[in-house]
Image (cartoon, rainbow, N blue to C red; front, side, top):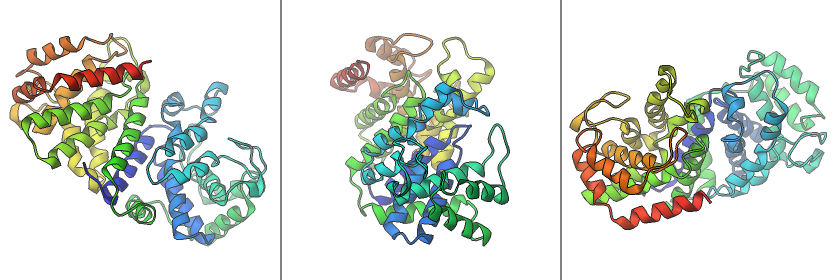
Length: 417
């Protein structure tokens, strides 16, 4: 199992990508909020550790939105319906609940819960007012609004600096704390606010991690964060609860049949959790469709391995996971995607993930069919050996001890209760 601060920071960056891969409101939003928040925190005299908390608070503040209002992301409208607005207003509490499960970052929970509180008490979740709102939450409120204004929305284009200045001025003492608002306006007028840059953002992730995380992050902490990311991925598709973890467990079990080295097993473990990262870019209407997909809809499905791999390629400490993620839908006979690889040109880690992914898909209920019996699914693996699956990977899969399948099936039943 990979551990250490750098790998963990990479997973936090991947978590940002999970939240930002929606095509609607949240694209690049979290990183922009994070960068602006930490900059304002420094200007307001906060400590390095407090600025790092603000940075990660900005990244994670909308974590509760995933799986909550996908229709608002994918089909954005100028005004939210009452139902969607009610769901959106629940996201700070959900973000708070989820960050409590992120090792080393649990102290961010109050920031996330209160990042939509308004100075005049008209915000949510708790209707706090004035100095009753922690300074960090006040900073996040302004940074969240400013970042949103600077990005395109269905009913308007991205606003420029002058228009954003007017909004902030009008909101002083209402939405925004006067001290935070004045700090922003001073920097804005002086042209001292840096433009958002992804490379600077990546460097800031590492600096913030150095401030808040221990030098050696335990494998247990890494596993917990992988579970959180996988749960957010699975939340996109109501039919895949626990899928990512099961693929990870099975992939490692198959690797043990091959007696593969610890580094490869570790890559399969983390890669199994992240193999469907690209599904966050697939519209929910496609994932949940019960009928046959159109060619346009299937194009979204075919793209998800490449989309996930491209996210990981951009994160240095996660680049070694790219191979399995990119090629886990290739088939031995060359009829798979995204590149139509065949035979031994498909990397072994991808062959292993492919058979584990297919088995779990067969034994899960999907929008278009009911789940299949585990024995039937293993029979299909044997039948498709040398056609869909690499023969050695299929043979190793069929040697996995029965107890592992029984445990996974029991956990699946517990999830569905």
